[in-house]
Structures are given as structure tokens and as C-alpha cells.
Length: 445
Image 1 (cartoon, one colour):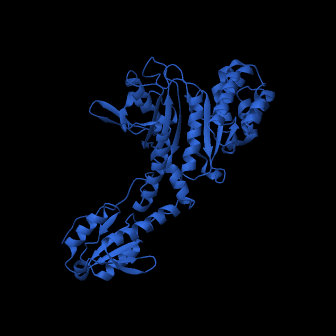
Image 2 (tube, one colour):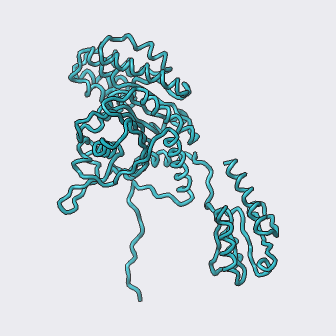
Image 3 (cartoon, helix red, strand yellow):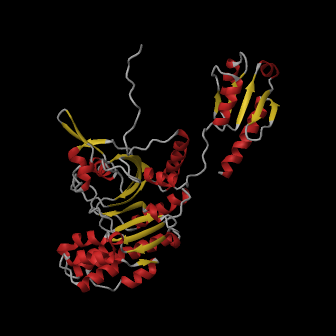
């Protein structure tokens, strides 16, 4: 008697694991994103999942510290990367003398955060990042280029978005102009959550920071301004002559001009002063793309400008701008909403079913077809009826039945599993039939 105790198979929560037929769809989304990045002259980069703790934690703080997976191997403190930006900073600092600037890189890879697993939040997830890093300076046109890429990516994914764009210098400068420079960060933290807590609660929290009621109203009104880029720019451009504020206005004007030159459809973006993004490393342009028909999805892509990417690792000034798509979260949201593109349970175009002692001949046929199609041989020692049931379950488009008579005549029984039609054809004609059907399917999906 076997007394072995079986272990119940289970996986950690917060880690997505897709069945193969959905993984095919996920991989196709990655391919589309990668194609857009590459078409814009971004080069691939793949950094290690594990980094020295002192490297990875140099720019962290607050909640991130609690979420990082950290461990010790011997005397070495190690962390698992929680985003792709810090590894990029480490890479450009290490290789600055070999890199040609501006450095345009994309990276698609897994990152890890030990936060509470819940709907829309994962502990392991794939980010799709694209960044442009300059040396000493980086023209504002780079910001517009990243925003144009966001537009192209979601068009490639056939998802409608509205990109909410702002510049952190607007609210920074306005706080300075009102005399609250020392409280700017606390004020922005409150304004950043105004849509969650409402105007009244935001005003109460601002007043607790000794902001006057009149200034509360001014700050809240400015934060809530959003709409067509040119219209909002015109409304806000003369609110104050504060230098930082006017820098924000000028940068937004340039971004708008360059986006127009790049042909980005104005119906796909707005100027929204309330976009602040909590990360302190953002210093200028910031943006969050949302799907207006699915506001419950919240932000599906975000990013912005940072003045000094690698300041913890080098004395060289390296300003940058980038975007990030949390693809695991986006895919899960689309899946839950029934919005994934059509998928098949298999990628097989043709399956060969041997009848009698014909397996070797079937393998030779597979070699012929595999140069043009995804071809498989069902070599299981099971009945023909069970093999047909399996073919139906996998939703195979075609099967090729090969018995001894077919081998002798070199005419094979090709069956269309969708229509039920069957023909006796040469292998060349079988290839033409299956290939033509594959072209039609690829055109219609």
C-alpha cells in the first residue's frame, strides 16, 4: 500500500497563471506593444530580476519599502525589482560612456510587489515600459513623442483611451505663488486624491495645513480644470507670473505643439491639471491614460518627465521621460469585462491522424506541412473515435486522416472540422486548402 501523502496543488495569490489559449492572446498583445516601441526606434533592454538592495532601495520610500521582496544570500542583501525604472537608472549610470544619447529603450518584463492581493492588483505582473533618457538635457519634444507612443500602442491594441495630461510645475508654482512653498508636497498629496475624497474633504484637509479658505478654493478650482488642451491652456496661462508656474505653461504649450505635429488625434487626449502622480521623481509632464467607456478600469497607462533619473548612482545629469503599461492588470480587466479578442483553444492548423501502421509516414507528412503550417500528429494509442472527440474539443480547423490506402494512392482524407466536408487530395492540394482557410481566418480576426 502506498502511504505517500499527496500535496494539494495550489499557487500563491496575486500571481496570474493563464491557460495556454489565453496566454496566446496575452503574447499577441505583447507583440503589438513591442512592434510599436520598435517602430519608434526604441531598443530592447532586459535587466536582472534581482538587484543589490542598496541599488534598488536608493530611490524608494514609504509604501514601496514595505512591498519589496528582500532576502539575504550569504552576506549579500538582495531585492526583487519592483519596477523597471530603477534598473534603467542603474544601467545608464553604469554604461553612460558607451551609450549614445538620447537613449531610447523599451523593456517588457515581470516586476514584484508584496502588497495585498486584490482585484486588479498583483504581486507579480508584467510592465511594458518605454523611456527616453538624455545627457545633461532632454528637449520637451521627447515628452510629446512618448505621448504619441501611448496613442499608437492603444490603437494597435484596438482599445479606446483618453490620455489625461498635465505638468507638475503648474501646481508647484501656484503653491509657491500663494506662499505655501514649504507645504507644497503635503498640499499636492491632498489634491492628488480630490476625486476620491471630494472637494469638501479636500478643503478640510487643506485648512488643517493652515491654507486659507480663499486659497483652498483657488487650489481646488485649478486642480479640477480639464478639457481641450488649447482651451484650458488659455484659461490658466495668466493666473500667476510665478517662474515655476510659467515654466509649466510653456512646457505644456510645447507638448501640445509637438503632439499636433506628430499627428496625435486631439479627441484622444485632454489637459487635466488634476493629474499629479504621487511619485516624487516626476518633475514636469505627467499623464494617465484611461478608457472613457470603462472608468472602473482607472489608469491603464501612466508616466511622465523626471529631471535626474540616475542621481543616486552618478554625478552626470540624466533627465528622462517615460511611459509604463501594467499589462497583467490590463489583461485581467479586459478578461473580466469579456473584452479579450477572439481566441482559439489551440494554435494547430492541421492535425494528422494515423490509421493502422502509418505513423512513420505521418511524421514525414508532418515535416512537409510544418514548413508552412502549425502541424501536429496525434500519435496516441487510442481509438479513432476518441481522437475525433479530442479534435473537436481542441477546436481544430482541419484533420488529415492517413491510412494504408492513402499512403499507396498519395491521396489523403482532409476534413474541415467546421463544415464537416471531406476531400481526397494530394498533400500539395491539402496544403493549399488549409493555407487559404488560414489566410481568411487571419484577415477576419
